[in-house]
Image (tube, rainbow, N blue to C red; front, side, top):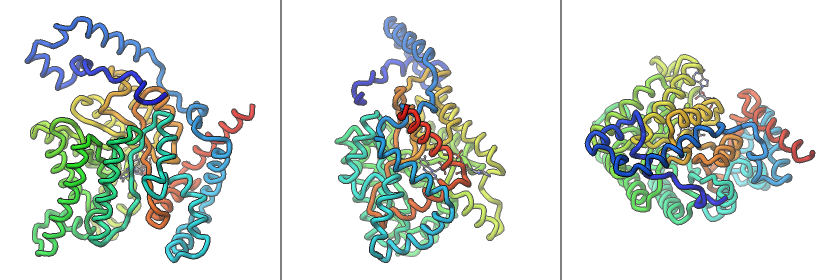
Length: 444
Ligand SMILES: Cc1cc2nc3c(=O)[nH]c(=O)nc-3n(C[C@H](O)[C@H](O)[C@H](O)COP(=O)(O)OP(=O)(O)OC[C@H]3O[C@@H](n4cnc5c(N)ncnc54)[C@H](O)[C@@H]3O)c2cc1C
C-alpha cells in the first residue's frame, strides 16, 4: 500500500496526550480545546483503544520481511552473509580488496559491486539508487539518503559533499519515498579543526578561523535548505574527540531551524556513559531556548577505537563499563523520547530487536499513534529487514539508511559492514537464519 493511503496521524491527538508537558500547558491555558470538540475526544479515545488492542509487531514473520525480495535476491543475500561469516575473507577484503579497488586493478571494482555493494549500497548516485528507493517505498519504507563520502580532507571534497547533500534534500522534497538526509560533519570540515574546537580551544589562527567559518556556512546551507523544503537532517555521531564540536554545531542549527517544527536531529551515542544525562540536558536547553529537540538514538560505532585511544593517552574511557550498561541507557533514552514525543522528534537507529520492541510497547502504553510524525525507526540497508519491513507493515514510521555513492567512495563503509557481519558478533547468524527460514517457507 502506498504511504499516502495510510490513515494519517490525526492532528487533534496532539491536544489529548495525558502526562505530556506541552498538553498540560495548553490545557491549563486554554481550558482544553477538546471540551469544545466532544466528538474529537471520542474519536481519539476510539483510536487509542483500537491501537492498544493491536498486537505488537512480530519480528519473526519472514514473509513480511522479505516480500520485496525475489527468490534470486534471497539466494544472493544468503551467499553474501555466508561469505561474510568467514572472518578470513573479510580480512582479505579489508587488506587486499580495498587497495585493489583504489588502484583500479582490473575486476576488483566489479567484484565488490556484485557482492557486498549490492547487499548494502543503494546505487552509485541518487539516480542510480531510484529503483532501490522505489522498491523500499512499495513496502512503506522510506529512505534516509546517506552519501557515503568518508575521510575527506580538501575544501573541494567538503563542498562536493555539501552539494550532494543539497541534491538529496531537493530529491527528498520531491519524492515522498525519501524523507531525510544524513550529514557527516567530518565530510564538511577537517578532523583536526573539529578536534581543536572540541577541547574548548579558541586560539585559532586566521586559516583555522576561515575553515571554521566555511564549515558553518556549509552546514547552515544544508539546514536552511532542509527547512525550506521540509526535509529532516540527521547529523551523524562521531568519535568523542570531535563530538563536542559536532554537538555545538548541531545545537546552533537546531536553535535556528527547529523553531516551528523539527528539522535538524543530533545523534546521541548511548555507549557513552554521559549521554543519557546529555540527552536530558539537551531537551532542557531546547525548552529554555524555545526550539524543539531532534534526536537520533544509537548505541555507537567506535567503541574499540575509543577504548584504545583512552588507554594509550591515559584518560578515562567515555565508553560504558559494560554492554548491559549500554543497553540500560539506550532503553532509558527510548523511554524518555517516547514519553516526551510532543517535544522531541526521534529516530531510533538500532538493529537490536529488544530495543525496537520496547519502542513499540512504550508507544502503545503511552497511546502514541504508530505513525506519529515524531517517532521513526531506522536500520541500515541490507540489515535487519525483519525490523524495518515488519514495523512498516504494521503502520509504524520505518526507514532505511540508504548509503549511495561510487564503489571507491563507499569502500570504508563496506569494510565496516562486512566486519560487523562476521560470525563473531552474531549478526551474520541472525540474518542468515531468517533468510533460510524464508527460503524454506517459500519452498513449501
Ligand atoms: C540507522 C542507523 C544510524 C546510525 N548512525 C550512527 C551514528 O551516527 N554514529 C554512530 O556512532 N553509530 C551509528 N550507528 C551504528 C550504531 O551506533 C551501532 O554501532 C550499531 O547499530 C549496533 O548497535 P545496535 O543498537 O544495532 O545493537 P546491538 O548489536 O545490540 O549493540 C551493539 C553495540 O553495543 C555497544 N557495545 C557492545 N559491547 C559493549 C561493551 N562491552 N560495553 C559497552 N558497549 C558495548 C556498541 O555500541 C555496539 O555497537 C547507526 C546505526 C543505525 C542502524
